[in-house]
Length: 628
Picture 1 (cartoon, rainbow, N blue to C red):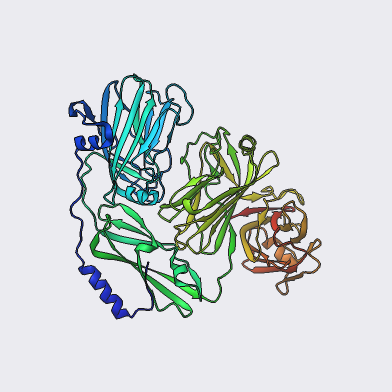
Picture 2: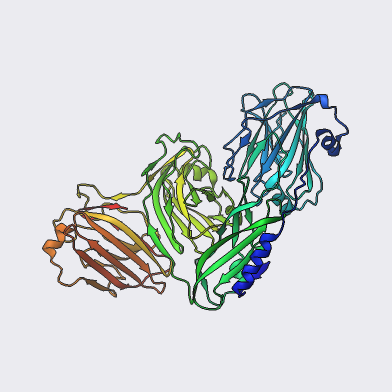
């Protein structure tokens, strides 16, 4: 890695000038001739007259920004007649990050209800075969070398010229052979032999995941970089951090002349920090990339920059409770298909967690028929998609650690998720990574947890999330109590929300009151996960519980209770619940009344708190709350 740190501006400008003057190399690109390529596959010379060249429809498959999720797009099926050979040429634009984020070939019957095999580019596949064997036992896999460098191969598949040949021998078996000429100018081969098929009912189609395909003419030219955006630049860096450590998480998304993009690691970028990396304050990271899509020197480099702050200590994490819109997501009969409905995007600032609570209703057909969370940029470009069932995908997903509670019984879990009460926590760590946590209390009373830590490739200043569904529907929590303020004391509660040590959670809501008594407003309950109480506090300078006695309860001076009560019917409230991490907690509330006045209520120093088991919820007493 080349680090350009503490360099004089004159030298940096001179360096850029030299880069600009460098001429582009690599005008000569490969060409594929069918007979020669077929002979290289080890099957001997082929008679061109027996080869049927086909161009699947559509000719471009998948989103060109490589955001297409698994099993969502397919070409039309093409019938493979007995005794015929079919050839397809295409460009494979992979993500360059994972082996499986490339093309797949699907062999199935006309009705599409039976798969003979699904074959990936990376020496892997599955299916039962026509004779019903399990897994991949009914075909033989072969590639150019058992020692294939998978890291280099994945990068090379970011733009590979592929020729795929399918043989339907007419005897109940089929072979698939592929030649892939990668962006590194290396040739890779992949074969799947003796696939068990119904010779008279064999159809094939293509799908892709995290990639896209272009069928037809595969003669292309190298392309120049035109733009670059930076990923993984922390918003804050502690003074004294090693430069290598700071830059290790930085990547770039480079756009090239043909409109395709490529993720570039830190090792292929050039950096300068202005001013230097030794003093507190705001800094600018300048990044240069000077290669073409094929890795040759380009004629004009692209430059991008991003600001960050060098600080003595990192700012604290915060939490904010949010209510996504729409409140009801998906059809109530759970018929909405995958990706068929989405909430609006919600922005998360660096060092912030957004919390949402909802009821998950599922068809219970499969594990994935539950909520999904999409992490993305403002323009919907995805970092990662994670599901309720310990699974996900996307450029940022590969680096994360998915975990769940030990010994999950999937059959019980599927059933329990129909009506499960869910609390989700989505965190922007501010350093180019993100975490997702879901706590699911099933209809059987069991609690299930799902976490995804260390999702990367995140731009902390352009980080959003939203919910989507797949054979399920979600109802987000927005209200506590009856709208006519008839709910009695303790008659309704919001879900528990966890606040970890040294964090503060903010909840914004509208308080409606019967106005009969001071206590006919919101209450906040501080408790453990099992609802054992630390303290309960009200809006009117009063509370109780083991931890309440030690606290200091204060409000604004000279509160007029007769004026305050009617002002609380429709008051806009912002409540902060603070876990100090030392066995104490604080609650700070600002109530903007309908009379235009602000009222404050603080409870400082509530004690007997276990900072590792600290939750809160809202309840009512002749009142009604609507969360924002």
